[in-house]
Each structure stands twice: as structure tokens, then as C-alpha cells.
Amino acid sequence: MSKIPSLPNVQPQLLDIPTVEKLAPVGDINHPPRILMLYGSLRERSFSRFLTHEAARILEQFGAEVKIFDPMELPMVGSVPETHPKVVELRELCLWSEGQVWCSPERHGAITAVMKNQIDWIPLEMGAIRPSQGRTLAVMQVCGGSQSFNVVNTLRLLGRWMRMLTIPNQSSVPMAYKEFDDEGRMRPSAYYDRVVDVMEELFKFTLLTRGRTDYLTDRYSERNERAQKAIDRQIQQI
Image (cartoon, rainbow, N blue to C red; front, side, top):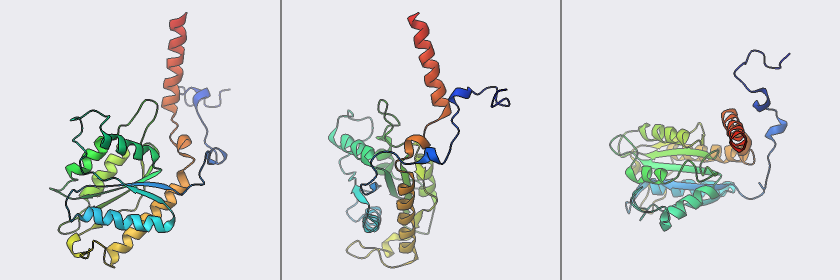
């Protein structure tokens, strides 16, 4: 009798049965967690940049290695070849990262063009490599007025599209001009405490998933597709 008689559309030899043992981490995970941070404003006094740097300090306190991408001089997507130095820098940082933080101001109820442009330059696939798949993601936003969640909701949608593991917690800072001093440091508040919460959760989730992302993102449909392509190649050789 078949082991899966109730699943006639499934190829039994391609169906992986998850176990705790299969979730054991593989590879080198002794280095500090690698976190890439993106922010969505080019202004000299940029509150999304201030918030990103504040979050970076927290992550470094936890023990992460943090790199912040500067979006200044990153061309609009499609306007230059992919060999442009800023594009190469962004993509290499994405490949380097194990987790990411995206932080954007809210403009006209949505993320900024600066933020979207960075995400648009990150391809879903680079040959056999997927630069964003399986990486953890935390999302944050700054608001000029009352608190909103439009940006973090949009960033969650984009993170899902990029096949990232977006953590449950998030940060939205209203009236951001009140929350940072003249030096760009965030003042003590419940909003600051939430940023600590979010970075702590990101750090934990990154530790939890690294060394396991290849297994976590291995899909039945893709195994089935690869098997079918292999059969097609064999038929063509006959």
C-alpha cells in the first residue's frame, strides 16, 4: 500500500517529511550574525537614517556585524547596467547578509521612491542564487505626523515577495522630528523601547534560522520541476 494513498497528485519520492533532525544547522555559523540595513531618504536630516543608525547600535550591542547601505547616488532601476558600482555594492551586501532591516519614511501614504528603488535593484534570482530568500527581515517606518502603519505593511508585502522571513514585531515612530535630538540620537521613549524589542527579535530569529535556510526554503514544487526537467533532458538525448 502506498504511504500516501490520499495524495494521488504527489510524487512520493519527492515528498520530504520534515523532522527535527533535518533542521540541524549546517555550515559555518560561528561568525557574528550579518545584518544589512536599508533606509529610504536622502535628506541631510533624515529621520529614517537616524532610526536605522540607532537600531544598528542596538544590534551591535547584541553582537551582530552590521552594514548600512548608503542609497545616495544609486541610480533609478533600469537606468544603468547592473554593473554600476552602487548596484554591485548593494547586491554584494545582500548576498553577505543573513538578516536585513528596512526603514522608510511615509510619503503620500506609502514608502519612498528611494526605498523602493533599493528593493527593486535586488533580483529574486541571480543565476542559481537567490539573494534575499530565507533571510530574516525587520521593518520600520518614521512618520511626519500621527502614527501610521502603511509603510511597514507595504514593506512586509515586499519582504514576502522577496521570499524573506519577516519577523512579527515592527516599529512605527510618529512625529519623528520630536523623537531625535540635534545630534540625531533617539530620545528615551516607548518608541525607543519598541525599537529595542524589534532588534532583539530580529537577532533571535536570525540565530534561529541561519544554517537552516537552505532546508527551510527547499520546496516540493521546485523538486518536482527539477525532476521533470531531468526527464525531459533524458528524452531529448534518446
